[in-house]
Length: 408
Image (tube, rainbow, N blue to C red; front, side, top):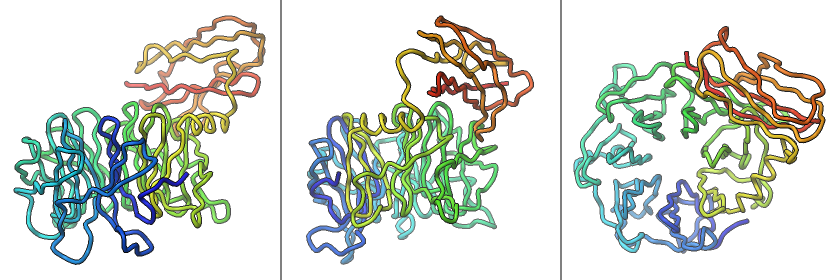
């Protein structure tokens, strides 16, 4: 349902700080003379919002846009269209903290903020800046992002998996750094700009034309687009935001609303109930707080009970009754074999299958009727390449999955 106080705002980002949620916004699609762009705050889990712009200044008649946030202890940092700002009182007042960031307009357009350990990174339209002192001072840290072919690098988004930092730039390349940003490398270019990145269970998911996933630091990618196409021309949806919540993935699309996956992106279904205002909106940002999923759209903020959505997603793939269960394989990661365990509480027709991330079935381990009891089976992957595989247990037409990681 739509929330109050953020109507007609193009909401680009969220940050959670304790029980308070912050939203960053740009100008909405329809002029609103009361408020356009800037930052908002909610203290009731996203139901209502107030603007918190004291201290923001662009030097022009145009309002400031807040593209991204980073929470550092009791402080909140905002990446804006006019540099980096910081608040230590939940947005009551903001102070600019852009010392060391180049003064050109592109460098001051901070589209991505990332906290990794105690280090802050600011991804701008002109490279990446780094701070080790909570934003008091910044220095350029983007060696490797520039060459003769690509002299400019507009950083669209950043994320991290442990100490490995990822940054997407607008020419289609996804860079990574293993030395706190001192040097950056990339393997391949998708050719399309990747607008959003998220990691879940050591897998990097990238949103561009559909969703892609990599488990080897961007060396190789698989495309996970089942359900992310229109029904008329079968074109892939353009993805503007992606989030991992518990074991579920959510993808915000351009023009087609919100999609959800309960099987690590192998299949997707629309979750657009209540989003028709005046039509299914673009979804630019996704957050969650205290049992609610919050999405930022071209027409403000919507929220919905996360348990309601998760129940819906589970029902897409078949309601899983209480009379069977599939355990996580052990060991996991594994090389080359692992043990899969499952329980049946009644006599049932059972299928146990292994799939790769492309959805291709590579092995049928069990098919047939089995009695109610605990079962274990060994899966030998000696002839398969390293990567992520999906174990799917189907009992009397209902299914449950577990993700397995083969590391050779």
